[in-house]
Image 1 (tube, one colour):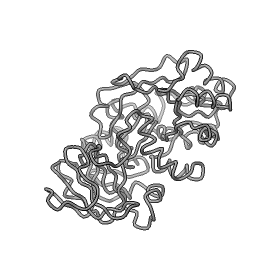
Image 2 (spheres, one colour):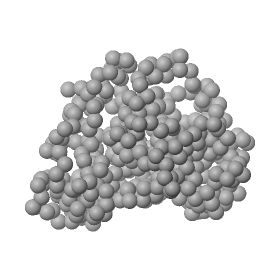
Image 3 (tube, helix red, strand yellow):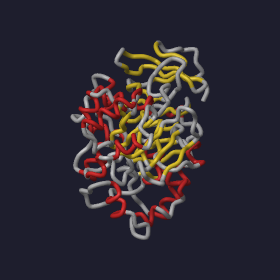
Image 4 (tube, one colour):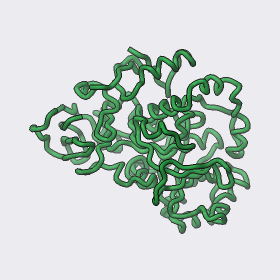
Length: 380
């Protein structure tokens, strides 16, 4: 995409324009009329692209599975993982790379530009329409399931920990420390079964916690002790988990978490705070010279950016830019749809990056007509 300016965008500081060129934000402020392409933002709210700190991308076509409550994740997995039965059988007909792509679209449709994928690495991760930063992962403290994706010196380690309500779950933080896995690069996912001594250990270690309230409430009837974690100064981020247990999308997760977490803290968890926990602190914020990962929301009645985000639904997403390139386009931003593919989502035209048309065709052949993350997506 050549240099683009989008003006008349709403921020907490008033109306601004944003310039994009070379994958970066070139300016924030008065519209630069000398740019190659100038667009009217129609009063949409300007936000950084959202951060989903926990997802299993290849599982995001599954419906909610199981008959909760459960004592822990192992009990849930034994109950629901039957690949020879519906609905897993049908979804597994798709290639793993195709299911990863659907997981990426699930995130893109709700304004997510960066996601932490909790599963084995795959070549497709580098070509998804959203960012997947380098990571290390373990399924659990004593699990043999684990691996990495393009690790580097500062790659964070994501691990399910304290996901349950039984005695074994409450012992997992101590076990992490015992085997040398509790440190400043550790990211505990779920952390439901943690008491005061465990919280103190987490805080001293410098580790962070990824919350998945909707998934936790569905499976176990409770979630992490969020207030205690905040008081201890533990860095927090928010994740959806997969659709097999969690919300349909990150916007739904945010709405369900309101009242559990302060609005300003929620906003941070899916922007700058979430980016820091994923090891990509340059993301999740708007700054001149920074990466052009942007989200435009059509919420004209919102009084500020936080309210605009926390009351938004996927249909309010008008434009998503990843690495400076449009990845999702809706009116009035049609001039940015070049090289994107058109589909109908709940009857309204949307242009998406990637091979969405061929993916839809193949998915329809294998799974039939269905909703995707609560939305009807159909080829034109």
